[in-house]
Image (tube, rainbow, N blue to C red; front, side, top):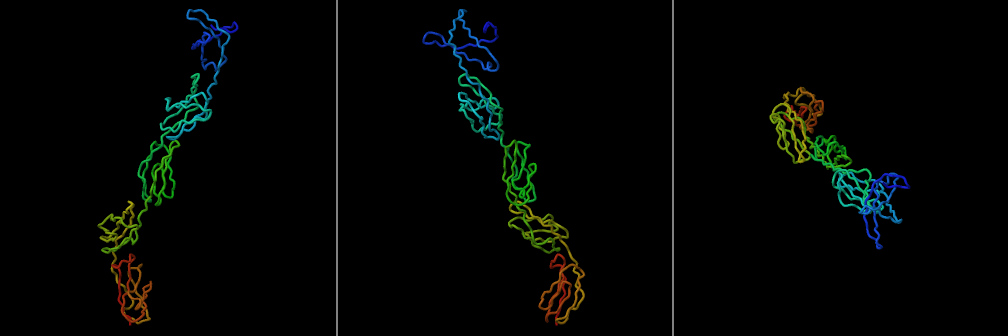
Length: 364
């Protein structure tokens, strides 16, 4: 057992390697285990020949010490293809990057400054092991960093204003956002078109984001009225043009190229599908009116005099076929202007000519 100053100490033996000097002496090199750095230790030397005899040791014992590894922090990590590095390094040490405990890439020699292992395309937790080039001592560097995959977003990337479409993302559990909520909003992957235009929908998971360009198409507008008399027609005008027409009930109202024909009393929706796939709808009522006659007044009277007319169906509008001969006001009062013949009319609310009531006049 090794002794120091007559005091017994416990310990273990370490084998060394020998070389022969120029003077014939043997030189032995020993590597002291790193465990000796953890507490106070004594080093004793003993040499024994292969025959069991003690061998004399001269007094020239040279002790060479090497610094312990400095533990540096890992840097980087995050989304796929992000860079992983080390906040510092020591010369004489090499640094091996590992992912999931297995080496990846080549070891990088210490420079005395921060080092980079480059961008990493494998997901997982990264760590670094330092190795001393002389003693082969190793040390683990600081807490590992993770590299995670970038999310993917799939689904329909357009909708009509006022309509919705659905997007899905992998992995789940992230957050959705719209770059312009006046164009489209998003909640749980359901996108609602607000107004025509373009925006970007983003999805973020574990700090990594994926984006998808999104288009909201305008709904066509229809003008031209919402009622038609039985067996009469009205014309609906679309903006923009170039789409296709359809009726929800052609037995009540049919449509061709925007011309709606009243087929039976009732209601039907006339739809127009634009070239962008969006649909504009106009509700059309098909009505019928009894041809009640205009009463009151006289059919012949002098210029510059008046006569009053009455329509049994109220709420219509009055007009004259020739205001140069006779004019009629909103109350049905007819004023003679000059000699001749004209016609006064009273129309129903829907203002279709089929429902006009007429009376003819001779102005003397």
